[in-house]
Amino acid sequence: MILAPPATPPTISSGRIVLGNYETVKAITDNIRTVLKAEGIHFSHTPYDDGKNIPASLMPLGTVNYTGETFEYTHGQRPGYSEADFEIKVVVSERDQVVMTREQQRWVHAIRSVLTVDALNNGGLQDSLYVSRVVSRSVTVEKREYISTITYGLTVRYREA
View (cartoon, one colour):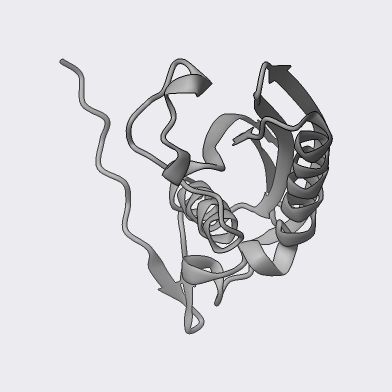
């Protein structure tokens, strides 16, 4: 088994905590989850293969998936920036089709309105303000019977350490 080297701890530079890039992306991911939890989206450690098996108490059920990054080469002239891509999935359930459509629309716009630069520059990123842009890439909705899955594509630009 090959183990990854331990992450370097945050350092202090000019009185500010400087996070490494891994710690920054981890903090961004945690902040996305925190913001969505505050909106009422539930998260579970149990994977559900079928939306029909999700307990009603967990609806709406969300996941935040890291899907990759783009790195910028800067020649050392200015701070480098990276863009981390995320896929947020939210499963909602409603038997009435009109209500289902409204729930889909409500959650798409709720997610869009709360995932802001200020919201993601919280917690471990509050002092450093690494996040500089949040872009909603795309949203798709997949509906099967009375279960609907909203897939929200998000790109977060952050300053590299």
